[in-house]
Length: 122
Image 1 (cartoon, one colour):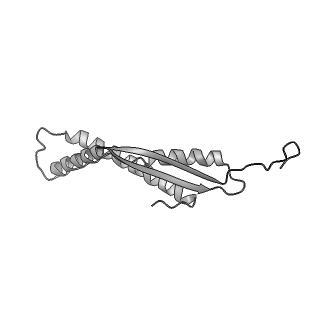
Image 2 (cartoon, helix red, strand yellow):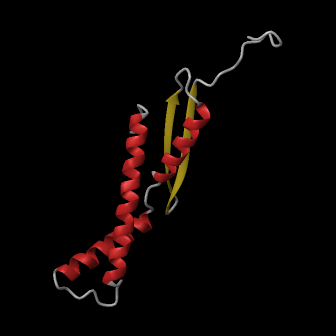
Image 3 (cartoon, rainbow, N blue to C red):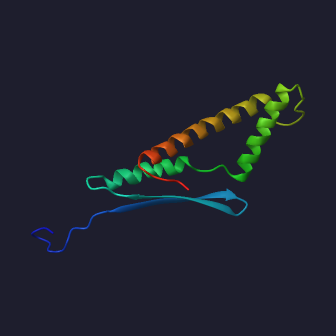
């Protein structure tokens, strides 16, 4: 309470940040993180960190997963001496797989950041 306002001052004690991702084919996946705010913590800063981390956790859509598997098969076929035919070029497939590896590294970093906050993702 303060002198000009006799009612108790409110404070943020818990923050929930969630995001619903479209996976395609009428499927969705929700990612949600709940944090209990400790005294002295800055809730706005925590919301910002969680929002960025959750955005990085965006899962691949069914179509993206299929395309990535096709690219990996193209690379494996090239390494085994199999002609890819009229499909995706090996160079393009390698770029797609390299980009997917960068995204996965960012995803793992976001998971570590949430873990450092004491979070558990199920």
